[in-house]
Length: 369
Image (spheres, rainbow, N blue to C red):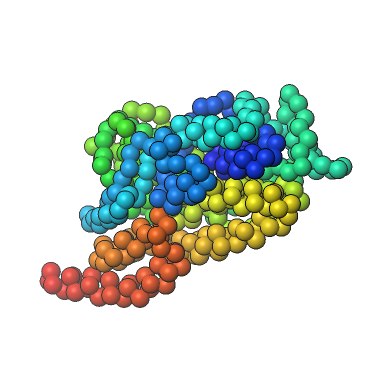
C-alpha cells in the first residue's frame, strides 16, 4: 500500500487479516494532520463495524443526532436516531486505522515516501529513497495529488470541474449540532461546522471553477458563528467521483487517489472504505478486473450525484428555498447521505415534491401581500 489514509490502512488491515504479507508505506510521520471536516456518517461507522472495527474503538469526540441547515434567513432542522454524524480529529482517526492494520499483521513504515513504481519484468517494484520493495500487487492510496496513478498511466491529474476546493479551521468553541450554511459562499458551494471537544471544525468550499476568495468567506462565516479564527487555516482539494479507470494490471487506485468523493457533500471516507473492501476482494481472488466490477454500484451512485450537483450547486438558493418550504426534502436528503435511503430513490422522489414546494412558496408570498 502506498499511503496510510483510511483507504490504504483499511486495505492493509483486510488483506493482512486474510494472511497476506502487507507493507503499508506513508510519506509523512504519524500521527499527522489532514484538512478534513472530520465527520463520519452513520454508514461509514457501520461499514467499519462490518470490517470488525467497532464504534467503541474509534476516537469519536461527538455523536450528533441533529443537523441544522441554514441559509438566506431560513433554517431547517433534521433529527435522526441513533445519530447522523460522528466527529473525529483526522490525526487520531487515521492513526487508529493504522494501529488496526498493524494489529492484523501489516508492517507500517512512515516517513518513507514512494518515488516510483516499476511494472516491468515478472512483478512490481515500489521504490523509495531507502529501499526497493517487490510486490505481487500495489494499491495506490496516496490521495488526490498521489503519484502511483501517474506512474502507471492511470492518472495525469483532474480537470477543475472534477475538484472541490475547500478551506477550514478549528476555532475554539462549542456546538451541539452539525451545521450546514448554504449561503456561506456566493454560489456553487456552502459552509459547514462540526463540533469537536472544545473546538469546532469550520469550513467553506465548493466546485473549484466557481470558488473565489475562500479564506475571506471562511473568515466571515466564522464570525457569523460567534467564533474567532484562532487556529491555522488549511486548504485542500477533493476529487469527485466519476466513472474512470481505476486499475492497471495489478495496480489498483483507492480513495482520493481514485477520485471517489461525493460531488454533493465532499464526503470521501466512506467511499475510501468501500474501495478498500473491493480492492482487497479483488486481490484475494487474483482477478484485477473484479475491482472495477465490485465498485460499479458506487460509481453509478457517484455519477448520479455528480449530475445532481451540476443542477443544484449553481442554483443553491432556489433549491434551498424548496428544502425550507418542504422539510421532508431535508429529512430524506439526510437519510440518503447517512445510508438509510438510496440516493437514486431520493432524487426520483424529490422531483415529485419540488412543484409542491414551489406552490407553497408562492402561496406564502401571496399571503404576505
